[in-house]
Length: 23
Image 1 (cartoon, helix red, strand yellow):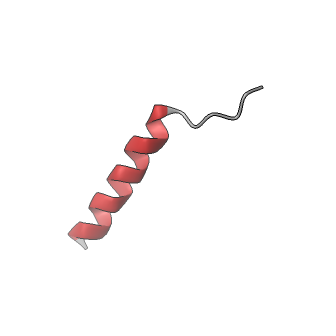
Image 2 (cartoon, helix red, strand yellow):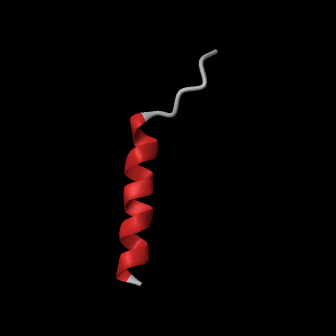
Image 3 (cartoon, one colour):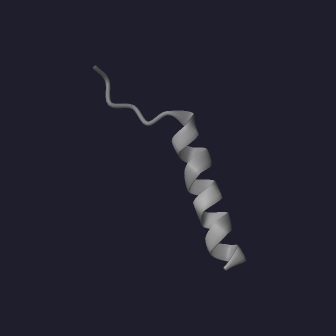
């Protein structure tokens, strides 16, 4: 079992950062 972060994680981080900016 390889512990590799999926590409979705990157999108999640981007969305989270965007939310912070909107605040």
